[in-house]
Length: 436
Ligand SMILES: *Cc1c(COP(=O)(O)O)cnc(C)c1O
Image (cartoon, rainbow, N blue to C red; front, side, top):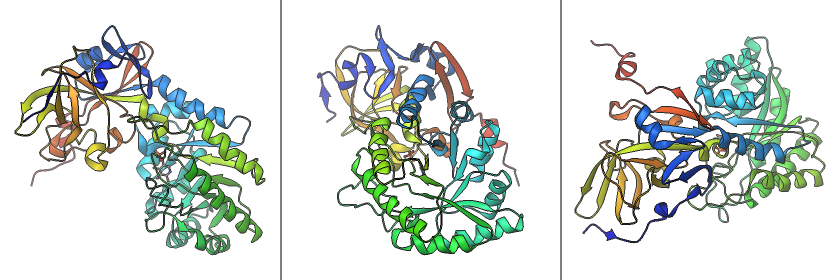
């Protein structure tokens, strides 16, 4: 039997700022992002609709900037988190560089007016074409992830008469048992070079004429909410810096990657400035405090700046569950289907407390197409829900599955709302194809 409850839900109790979302708040029963009513934005622009707060992005970036005050540090926004041009333009205007993972992302940095000399190129599968484009753009550094990639990059650089500035991405193998949620810095995944092999790989790189070794890089995972794995990884990386420099290979910068988590559901990651106070103390203690630092944060700069608005289409009492069928789906917001990720879902107009338990699902023909499970909601068809914490890894992961056009995006600053991506039309989708 579908569960019925009169207990007031978490979401209906929310007044004032929402947890983890200082720029999303309720005012006289209506949900706002900064000074813009979400109900009004949905009525004006339709749904699904992503709405981002500029103040939230500015605040998230400011925490890193405070943490690095007085240091030689470059923040390179990991743009795969949200690569919409206006978002990139905003970070470029704030002085950020970019961590890219494809030639397409390089083209986006150019289109957004970003500074190419602050671009670093990560990823395990860079093609020769992508290498050439990045070399010709004179990016800051390639983060190389294998010996095979070193050889190819050397060849490509020589063929252009250029030298590629490189870091090697090392794998600090931070203990999995104590920190089960970080995965990319462990043995047995596809990223980086094993700690034990790092010195010999650096020696090889230093001997290749098309390469110029400038730094060292690591990135231990994503949605990290504890300090300890970072501290451990920093120690392991600094051990390598000492070894590599003792072998006569100077390292101009240390790139410590990204990965800081956000509050999706009561998560309590350290604040960026507090985390960096601890990491900088470690760097200082070991004599590396004045070295150039680079970081590659993605999620923590944009994740909690965004909400996704979606209209309730139908309520359906299933045999075992109630379903709240909405017009956003896994193609718009893939994190629940991909990672079973949790996102708060709240009505944009406040309601009386009587609620029912629902699975919130999309229209896509897959059982994996759900946005939230077992949520207490009091809603009717035609109403708008806000899916929270959807600024990162949502639009940038969106697809056209089921021939659904990708959602529109709005950037809010105070009472101003600007459309930064129009809704994708069916003409947009069909334009690439040809009949027999
Ligand atoms: C994805 C990624 C990042 C950003 O990770 P977040 O968890 O979004 O901060 C940084 N560096 C590399 C190499 C990545 O692959």
